[in-house]
Amino acid sequence: MDVQGLQMTDTKPAPGLFKRNPPIVGEAEAIEAAKNGDAEAFSKLYALHKRRVYTLCLRMLGNVSEAEDMTQEAFLHLFRKIGSFRGESAFSTWLHRLTVNLVLMHLRKKGLNLVSLEETINPSEEDAPKRDFGSRDLNLTGSVDRVALERAVASLPPGYRMVFVLHDVEGFEHNEIATMLECSTGNSKSQLHKARLKLRELLRQPIPPIVQQGSSLKEAV
Amino acid sequence: MTNPEFPDFDTMTPADFENYLPDFFASGDGHVSTDPRLQTFLKNNPDCAALVRDLETIAEHAKSLFAPAEPSDAVWSNIQSKLKQGQTEEDPR
Image (tube, rainbow over all chains, first blue to last red; front, side, top):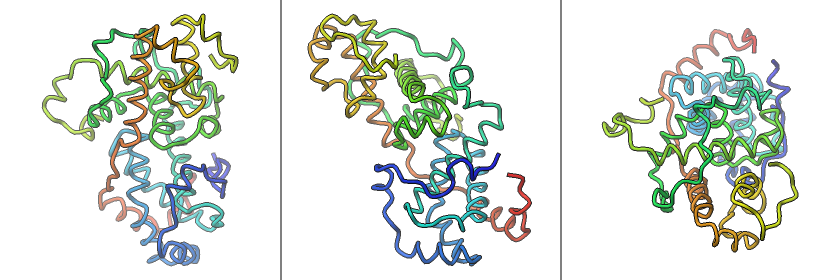
């Protein structure tokens, strides 16, 4: 599949993302130099954006090894495609979209068919959130431990995790997610809701022994 | 569930509420608990109100999840190596 066909060219950035991605000093010069094959300039772009790209991959994949592989792929792809960046959106927004598309392609190759969302993104009955409101004395009481929530997100079925990360963590709108995942906005809303319900269910469960031992997210995924 | 026409807020059942909840969240600013149309319903259905509070808490905390992390040095080494080998042009992707 041609990644270029997955909106790799300049697209209008989401308002929220554009606000979060102001231009970086020296970035424009590095981009122009990198377009001309300047290895040092490309190295600078890597240094400027490696954390953001890697963190995005880690959020979407929930796996350190895969996240590093995809970070590598994203920058190799960037090297090949940087000439198509026209500066109509923030470079970081463009690179962000490039990375999202690469990760989605990677997941499709692994067999997670995100196209036919209803059939394939839905988890098994066992993984699906329970349809109950729950008793009030088990409320999250307005506060959630960050590590516990990260762990819960990492344990979500891939389809739930993808929509939750794209919407609630990365700030994409449902229509953008629908375009990326090739599904309806209704599906995106539904999957997000199920993901949140599943997270609520997971957070209300007793802490498993592995958590009590203080293992990290990286070890758990 | 995706029907844009919401039910009558005065006669809505908890089951109706659950069915329309994804759309309630998607409309407006995503804060169902402060939606004026739902105040009476939520007051009369505390379990639904608790569910909404929990889901809003999860969504709110999601914004601060996964602090930026750094890839290992091996990633850049591999990139440099592949660029030197010119393998990017041969990548079937």
